[in-house]
Length: 161
Image (cartoon, rainbow, N blue to C red; front, side, top):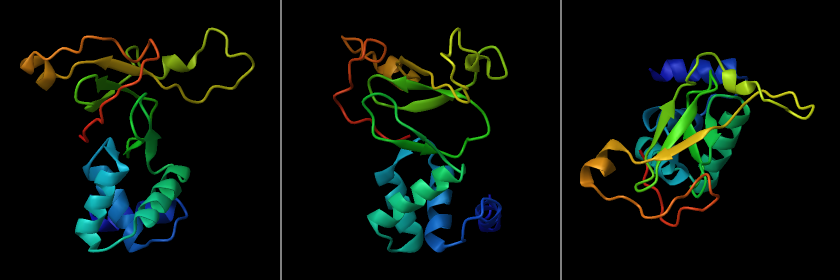
């Protein structure tokens, strides 16, 4: 996607086009599921200099405008992605923290139909699958305890993907 496409996305979302916004949006596009530190480094590579607060502000504006989605798997720092046009889910590796997208198993947003929503109008569901990524499976390094569904938190810092 060219810079002009990013500029158009910003304008279509009624956001002012600025160099930091273009750099951060490009970084999220190029590094799906990346944390803020990774996006900050990518933006600095492109711009030379940008403050940490500016990147946080841009991420907040992009998320509010619906151009990026913020996800926060249990025990992880916030991550960002540009795939915002559907209600997909994620699978997280318990060992290394890698994250991948997972489409709904039965098609178009069936997970939005709750058995009893308690009067809420549901517009999004967040499902996180946990397991071992292919690389960690190849290395045969299984974790000895379960996390995720039991409410246990990860204690190591996941790496960016």
